[in-house]
Image (cartoon, rainbow, N blue to C red; front, side, top):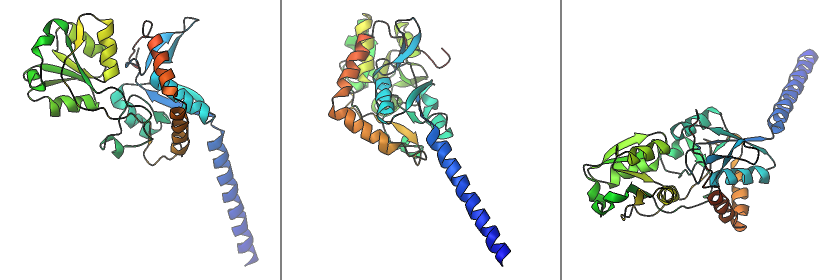
Length: 268
């Protein structure tokens, strides 16, 4: 009986040591890995810094840096196509996703979301300037080819709110814009700030005078069930960020880089 008791004590102590070791390993990570899709200025893009090195910038990148600083971690950024972000998040490839992403009911099936950190202008429809007069309502796009980024809520807008429109899904926003410029599609649907930036930088493009309703707020995604316990710290950081009006600073910083912003695919 004494031998059995002693053996049990050894096993309990060993289990306790393993648990401590596991906890120490988890706590030792001082890195917060962000997954994003850097083809979506002004939210996420790349630009050359003072040394000529390509670095990440944009509103969402500034938000991620604020969260990392607030929680005492070092930010690392991984670039990936938007349509793969949540699947890769669930696989553990990164700790959080910030990519101008709304917390839709469908997305909540595969990820958990933070409190909102920003609400953009409503989605807008970008068209060629010389054809803008053709589009006076959503029904005007019936029979037209309308582009949207793969796996975004903009696809749903084309399918559900633009009767008769033919959806063209592409992974990269830059490819969508090129398709529009070269008359391969008739229009593209983008988040408001993104559409406005393209219209401002290209005289051939304008925003159609057609309303798509109200915008949904953007949130930060973490793996379903929040296995790393990140959400409380993220929400605290967001509350502090909003209290101090930091998002306005992030928008101004992104706007100041608009002339040097480079939108890249994960491969690029």
